[in-house]
Length: 157
Image 1 (cartoon, rainbow, N blue to C red):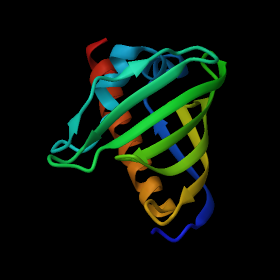
Image 2: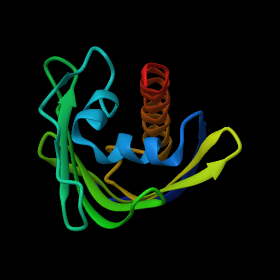
Image 3: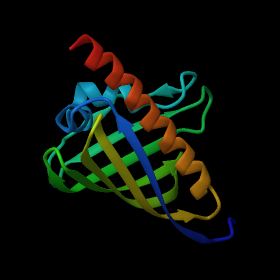
């Protein structure tokens, strides 16, 4: 039997993007756009990305290395202020084990060069299956992927 434990943590990540807040917000809100950057490592297999972007709506995606384990992301949108803020709650599972429950806030702020994004996550990391440093690194990787996506979109726009 697994020893039960909870590690509570909060982390904040800031990124500056050379794109208007409306463009950065749209990359989170549009299902086709978000499916292009909100993905795991290249070698991972993934499921279809589901996004119902509205207060009370859900977002789901699963993925993992070939042969497993499969990581499941299941979010619910709690607050949306277009172009300014997104607040969601989400849980992560690894196969059938819940590994964390989080509150995530994304803020979009006008900056001289475009947008300053502030991502804050408050998490309960369960039973040692996931740790705050791992989650922060994974989120940083996703925000870097968002930046690469925006460079391509802005450059082609």
